[in-house]
Amino acid sequence: MHKTARQKFLMELLMKEGQASINALVEKLQVSADTVRRDLAELEKKGLAQKNHGGAVALNLSAMSRTERSVLIPNIKLRIARLVVEKLPRGATLFLDAGSTLSGIATLLKGPMTVITSSLDIAHHLSDKPEIELILLGGKWDAQQRLFSGSATLMLLEKYRADIAILGACALHARLGLTAGQESDAEVKRAMLAASNEHWLVADHMKLNRCEPYQVASLSEIHQLFLNTPWSEFDGSDSTKVHITDPL
Image 1 (cartoon, helix red, strand yellow):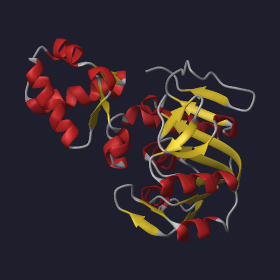
Image 2: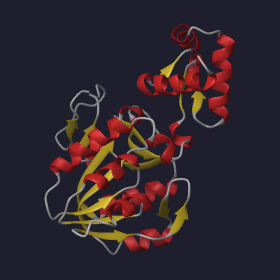
Image 3: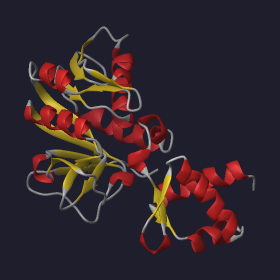
Image 4: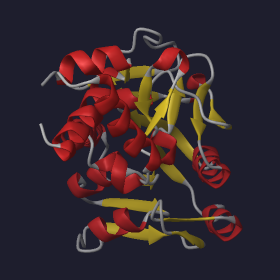
Protein backbone atom coordinates (compact mmCIF):
# COMPACT_ATOMS: atom_id res chain seq x y z
CA MET A 1 0.00 0.00 0.00
CA HIS A 2 1.33 3.44 -0.97
CA LYS A 3 2.21 5.86 1.83
CA THR A 4 -0.63 8.26 1.01
CA ALA A 5 -3.15 5.41 1.04
CA ARG A 6 -1.71 4.09 4.33
CA GLN A 7 -1.99 7.46 6.02
CA LYS A 8 -5.55 7.90 4.77
CA PHE A 9 -6.37 4.45 6.16
CA LEU A 10 -4.75 5.39 9.47
CA MET A 11 -6.84 8.57 9.70
CA GLU A 12 -10.05 6.70 8.94
CA LEU A 13 -9.21 3.98 11.47
CA LEU A 14 -8.43 6.48 14.23
CA MET A 15 -11.60 8.37 13.39
CA LYS A 16 -13.66 5.19 13.73
CA GLU A 17 -12.00 3.64 16.79
CA GLY A 18 -10.82 6.74 18.62
CA GLN A 19 -7.30 5.45 19.18
CA ALA A 20 -5.10 2.45 18.39
CA SER A 21 -1.81 0.92 19.49
CA ILE A 22 1.22 0.55 17.25
CA ASN A 23 0.86 -3.25 17.37
CA ALA A 24 -2.78 -3.08 16.30
CA LEU A 25 -1.90 -0.80 13.39
CA VAL A 26 0.92 -3.11 12.29
CA GLU A 27 -1.50 -6.03 12.23
CA LYS A 28 -4.17 -4.16 10.27
CA LEU A 29 -1.78 -2.63 7.72
CA GLN A 30 0.51 -5.67 7.41
CA VAL A 31 3.62 -3.49 7.43
CA SER A 32 6.53 -3.12 9.82
CA ALA A 33 6.34 -1.19 13.07
CA ASP A 34 8.95 1.22 11.72
CA THR A 35 6.74 2.00 8.73
CA VAL A 36 3.76 2.70 10.99
CA ARG A 37 5.88 4.92 13.23
CA ARG A 38 7.13 6.91 10.22
CA ASP A 39 3.56 7.41 8.94
CA LEU A 40 2.37 8.48 12.39
CA ALA A 41 5.34 10.82 12.80
CA GLU A 42 4.33 12.57 9.56
CA LEU A 43 0.72 12.85 10.73
CA GLU A 44 1.93 14.24 14.07
CA LYS A 45 4.13 16.77 12.25
CA LYS A 46 1.05 17.92 10.32
CA GLY A 47 -0.84 18.22 13.61
CA LEU A 48 -3.30 15.48 12.68
CA ALA A 49 -2.40 12.81 15.26
CA GLN A 50 -1.04 12.66 18.79
CA LYS A 51 0.39 10.01 21.11
CA ASN A 52 -1.60 9.07 24.19
CA HIS A 53 -0.68 7.13 27.31
CA GLY A 54 0.53 3.58 26.76
CA GLY A 55 1.72 4.17 23.21
CA ALA A 56 -1.77 4.58 21.74
CA VAL A 57 -2.32 7.11 18.97
CA ALA A 58 -5.40 9.28 18.38
CA LEU A 59 -6.49 12.10 16.10
CA ASN A 60 -5.47 15.53 17.35
CA LEU A 61 -8.85 17.20 16.85
CA SER A 62 -8.00 20.38 18.71
CA ALA A 63 -5.09 21.11 16.33
CA MET A 64 -7.14 20.58 13.16
CA SER A 65 -8.84 23.39 11.33
CA ARG A 66 -12.59 23.13 10.84
CA THR A 67 -11.96 22.33 7.17
CA GLU A 68 -9.67 19.40 8.03
CA ARG A 69 -12.18 18.01 10.52
CA SER A 70 -15.09 18.38 8.13
CA VAL A 71 -13.60 16.11 5.46
CA LEU A 72 -13.15 13.18 7.86
CA ILE A 73 -16.76 12.12 8.26
CA PRO A 74 -19.00 14.23 6.02
CA ASN A 75 -21.80 11.64 5.76
CA ILE A 76 -22.07 11.30 9.54
CA LYS A 77 -22.19 15.06 9.99
CA LEU A 78 -24.84 15.41 7.31
CA ARG A 79 -27.03 12.78 8.97
CA ILE A 80 -26.84 14.68 12.27
CA ALA A 81 -27.67 17.92 10.45
CA ARG A 82 -30.69 16.34 8.79
CA LEU A 83 -32.01 15.11 12.15
CA VAL A 84 -31.70 18.61 13.63
CA VAL A 85 -33.46 20.31 10.70
CA GLU A 86 -36.37 17.84 10.92
CA LYS A 87 -37.07 19.02 14.47
CA LEU A 88 -36.78 22.78 13.93
CA PRO A 89 -40.04 24.77 14.17
CA ARG A 90 -40.89 26.98 11.19
CA GLY A 91 -40.31 30.67 11.71
CA ALA A 92 -37.80 30.23 14.53
CA THR A 93 -34.90 32.57 15.21
CA LEU A 94 -31.64 30.63 15.54
CA PHE A 95 -28.12 31.21 16.75
CA LEU A 96 -25.95 28.94 14.60
CA ASP A 97 -22.49 28.25 15.95
CA ALA A 98 -19.57 27.65 13.58
CA GLY A 99 -18.53 24.14 12.50
CA SER A 100 -18.94 21.58 9.75
CA THR A 101 -22.09 19.98 11.17
CA LEU A 102 -23.60 23.44 11.61
CA SER A 103 -22.72 24.22 7.98
CA GLY A 104 -24.59 21.06 7.05
CA ILE A 105 -27.61 22.37 8.94
CA ALA A 106 -27.38 25.65 7.02
CA THR A 107 -27.38 23.87 3.66
CA LEU A 108 -30.58 22.01 4.60
CA LEU A 109 -32.47 24.90 6.23
CA LYS A 110 -35.71 26.11 4.68
CA GLY A 111 -37.52 29.28 5.68
CA PRO A 112 -39.14 31.18 6.96
CA MET A 113 -36.32 31.42 9.49
CA THR A 114 -33.96 33.98 11.00
CA VAL A 115 -30.33 32.90 11.48
CA ILE A 116 -27.70 34.76 13.50
CA THR A 117 -24.14 33.45 13.09
CA SER A 118 -20.46 34.38 13.29
CA SER A 119 -19.50 31.76 10.69
CA LEU A 120 -18.63 32.93 7.19
CA ASP A 121 -19.28 29.47 5.74
CA ILE A 122 -22.80 29.37 7.20
CA ALA A 123 -23.46 32.90 5.90
CA HIS A 124 -22.33 31.76 2.45
CA HIS A 125 -24.70 28.78 2.49
CA LEU A 126 -27.63 30.99 3.47
CA SER A 127 -26.84 34.02 1.30
CA ASP A 128 -28.91 32.82 -1.66
CA LYS A 129 -31.97 31.76 0.41
CA PRO A 130 -34.33 34.75 0.35
CA GLU A 131 -36.76 33.09 2.75
CA ILE A 132 -34.11 33.15 5.49
CA GLU A 133 -33.20 36.41 7.21
CA LEU A 134 -29.44 36.30 7.76
CA ILE A 135 -27.55 38.26 10.42
CA LEU A 136 -23.75 37.91 10.30
CA LEU A 137 -21.86 38.86 13.45
CA GLY A 138 -18.60 40.59 12.58
CA GLY A 139 -15.48 41.00 14.68
CA LYS A 140 -11.92 39.73 14.55
CA TRP A 141 -11.47 37.29 11.66
CA ASP A 142 -10.07 33.83 12.48
CA ALA A 143 -8.78 32.45 9.17
CA GLN A 144 -8.17 28.92 10.47
CA GLN A 145 -11.61 28.45 11.97
CA ARG A 146 -13.33 30.70 9.37
CA LEU A 147 -15.33 32.71 11.88
CA PHE A 148 -15.50 36.05 13.65
CA SER A 149 -14.79 36.30 17.38
CA GLY A 150 -13.52 38.65 20.04
CA SER A 151 -14.98 41.61 21.90
CA ALA A 152 -16.69 43.15 18.85
CA THR A 153 -18.49 39.88 18.11
CA LEU A 154 -19.67 39.59 21.70
CA MET A 155 -20.91 43.21 21.69
CA LEU A 156 -22.93 42.56 18.53
CA LEU A 157 -24.29 39.31 19.91
CA GLU A 158 -25.66 41.11 22.98
CA LYS A 159 -28.10 42.96 20.71
CA TYR A 160 -29.94 39.78 19.69
CA ARG A 161 -32.12 37.05 21.18
CA ALA A 162 -33.02 33.67 19.70
CA ASP A 163 -35.54 30.90 20.18
CA ILE A 164 -32.82 28.24 19.83
CA ALA A 165 -29.02 28.25 20.03
CA ILE A 166 -27.51 25.34 18.11
CA LEU A 167 -23.89 24.73 19.10
CA GLY A 168 -21.18 22.45 17.80
CA ALA A 169 -19.01 20.48 20.21
CA CYS A 170 -15.24 20.74 20.41
CA ALA A 171 -15.20 18.21 23.26
CA LEU A 172 -17.97 16.60 25.28
CA HIS A 173 -17.63 14.78 28.59
CA ALA A 174 -20.43 13.20 30.63
CA ARG A 175 -19.22 14.80 33.89
CA LEU A 176 -17.28 17.86 32.70
CA GLY A 177 -19.76 18.92 30.02
CA LEU A 178 -19.08 20.95 26.88
CA THR A 179 -15.62 22.50 26.55
CA ALA A 180 -13.73 24.36 23.83
CA GLY A 181 -10.12 24.47 22.71
CA GLN A 182 -10.03 28.26 22.30
CA GLU A 183 -11.17 30.87 24.80
CA SER A 184 -12.74 33.07 22.12
CA ASP A 185 -14.83 30.15 20.85
CA ALA A 186 -16.01 29.35 24.38
CA GLU A 187 -17.01 33.00 24.94
CA VAL A 188 -19.19 33.11 21.82
CA LYS A 189 -20.80 29.77 22.68
CA ARG A 190 -21.61 30.93 26.22
CA ALA A 191 -23.06 34.19 24.92
CA MET A 192 -25.32 32.33 22.47
CA LEU A 193 -26.61 30.11 25.28
CA ALA A 194 -27.27 33.11 27.53
CA ALA A 195 -29.30 34.89 24.83
CA SER A 196 -31.49 31.96 23.73
CA ASN A 197 -34.51 30.13 25.09
CA GLU A 198 -33.53 26.60 24.06
CA HIS A 199 -30.06 25.04 23.87
CA TRP A 200 -29.31 22.36 21.25
CA LEU A 201 -25.94 20.67 20.81
CA VAL A 202 -24.60 18.55 17.93
CA ALA A 203 -21.64 16.16 18.29
CA ASP A 204 -20.18 13.26 16.34
CA HIS A 205 -18.50 10.32 18.08
CA MET A 206 -15.00 11.83 17.81
CA LYS A 207 -15.99 14.57 20.26
CA LEU A 208 -17.26 12.28 23.02
CA ASN A 209 -15.40 11.56 26.28
CA ARG A 210 -12.97 14.40 25.63
CA CYS A 211 -12.16 17.62 27.44
CA GLU A 212 -10.63 20.94 26.32
CA PRO A 213 -9.39 23.78 28.58
CA TYR A 214 -12.27 26.26 28.32
CA GLN A 215 -15.62 25.54 29.95
CA VAL A 216 -18.78 26.30 27.97
CA ALA A 217 -21.69 24.57 29.71
CA SER A 218 -22.70 21.55 31.74
CA LEU A 219 -24.86 18.95 30.07
CA SER A 220 -27.72 19.93 32.38
CA GLU A 221 -27.85 23.25 30.47
CA ILE A 222 -28.39 21.46 27.15
CA HIS A 223 -32.01 20.73 26.28
CA GLN A 224 -31.48 18.59 23.17
CA LEU A 225 -28.35 16.64 22.24
CA PHE A 226 -27.90 15.22 18.72
CA LEU A 227 -25.43 12.34 18.25
CA ASN A 228 -24.59 9.79 15.58
CA THR A 229 -23.98 6.96 18.05
CA PRO A 230 -25.23 5.86 21.47
CA TRP A 231 -23.18 7.35 24.32
CA SER A 232 -22.97 4.84 27.15
CA GLU A 233 -21.39 7.33 29.56
CA PHE A 234 -24.44 9.60 29.21
CA ASP A 235 -27.91 8.37 28.36
CA GLY A 236 -29.86 11.56 28.93
CA SER A 237 -31.32 13.26 31.98
CA ASP A 238 -34.44 15.08 33.10
CA SER A 239 -33.18 18.23 31.38
CA THR A 240 -31.41 16.76 28.32
CA LYS A 241 -33.11 14.77 25.59
CA VAL A 242 -30.75 12.69 23.44
CA HIS A 243 -31.42 12.11 19.73
CA ILE A 244 -29.38 9.55 17.79
CA THR A 245 -29.28 9.31 14.00
CA ASP A 246 -30.42 6.15 12.26
CA PRO A 247 -27.56 3.62 11.73
CA LEU A 248 -25.86 3.53 8.34
